[in-house]
Image (tube, rainbow, N blue to C red; front, top):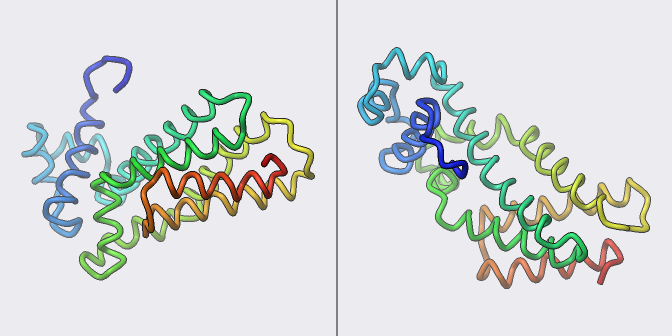
Length: 192
């Protein structure tokens, strides 16, 4: 909502679903409960997101947009230094992940807390990974890298997977982890 406009009904429904998922678990999120939370009819919720699978997809895509937004901003702010852009992008993603309600709920699902939420992580994982790799690839290829495309693709895949690993299971402060990821990426890409 950076444009200053009021959120749409769909945005309000999705945000309420994320909040409810964090509060009561995915299994207890219902269209009626969402309707009450948002202050609209149950039919309006269905009209906006369809059923529960459509709601799950909308939640995932909204969160993906938030994460990719911080990645793009980091690269926009460092057009002349690839390693700094990677460091800032990784750090921002890890910081955003720390307080992310939906992500916490998904991680708890992987540990058996709410197994109905697991499809959020597994069903869309390949397409989400591909989108993240595409965005990062477009950004990285804007820098003068002297590697063949298949090597750049391998480096991008590795960076995305390492960041996601730390999102799911943090091991240090985001700034420390971001610095380490950038160091590795810089060596692999011949930039450091």
